[in-house]
Length: 294
Image (cartoon, rainbow, N blue to C red; front, side, top):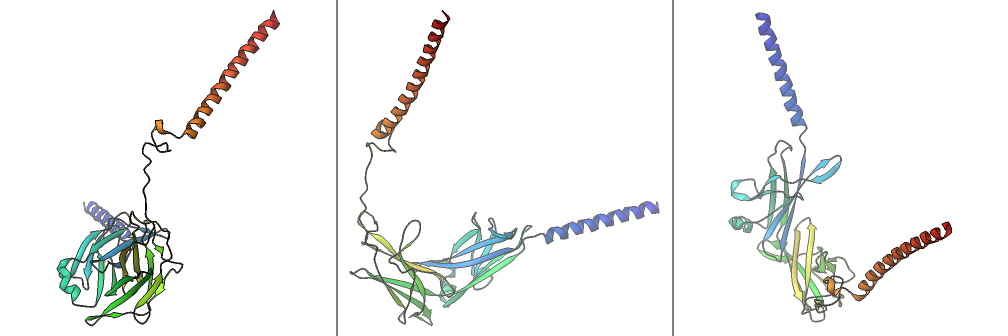
């Protein structure tokens, strides 16, 4: 009986040790997440934060979806929570600064954004932070098609021009913004200003010739990402062409182009002509064979 009890205790001990080992092995296999934060503000209005989450798999970084993040302003507390977000298929999540944090936002000229991940069965806990100062861009145009962008930062209680900031002055397009001339980037002077001459005279605009100019700062270490837009009538007027009820490649079958019809019918006639010719040749060969037998 004592031997049986000892064997049971030994078996339970082994099971407990193996279970602990498996648990430790599973914990050791948890992945590490890399969280990055970016700050954006468009047209000097509502700012927002973009969080990106990725992990390294087989030596390569891959974006991770479905990660629950808590975003905070300046400190990790319930009163400074910006939002609880979940990363999308691209591993990204965004959140605007809510009205409830207006006083907190106005209380300082510089803020730190925090992102925290509590961890789960697959990944270890992780966090990230980003500190930015308040800044804005103003854009102005003249009748001779000259564009001036001015960059300001908040110092104490007033907006102060900033020297040496690199920015782009471009035309807003669907795929990618197009620089207004051959210069890719511009740098502000001691007055916080930089100017560019518009040299894209033939670029298409809307029906009235309006295009959208944009001045933007990208991935700046101090100010994040800022942009401002302005519409100007400097483009070529877009006149839409109505091809409805005309012969085009994209029309209905009865409106197909003449050249396409000729090509299609020529192919059909040629193929059937060859087939009839082959059949006629076969009959001629058969008839010739009968004559030779007789």
